[in-house]
Length: 127
Image (cartoon, rainbow, N blue to C red):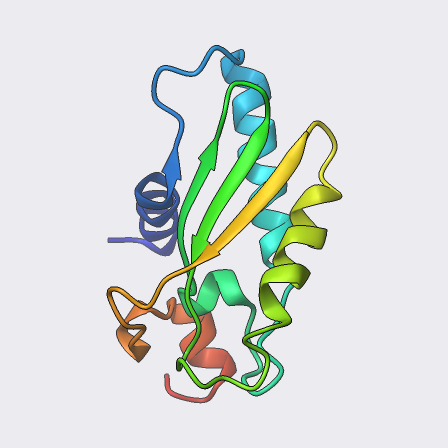
């Protein structure tokens, strides 16, 4: 599996857009821009962005362009637990065409290092 295939599969697993009334081209643009926005948010304790760390479990783009994000943290007691959802909301809300953002936290399943992309593993020196 190539890195590009792996990224495409990860994107497909995270995003829920089936049956969308949005034009395919617009949906693709929104998807790419949302992922780019998520990649601007970093866990302050780990030198990798939250998308590559595998902290984003699900992204739903509604027909009205409301983006619903389900995410986790590396640990329930993470020092930025109260702040990171706001960082995610602000980053995605800045994407052109997004009408609103709802971020929910989950710890099921718990985050493990296996969720990290190869890029994140390299960034933290595990690869």
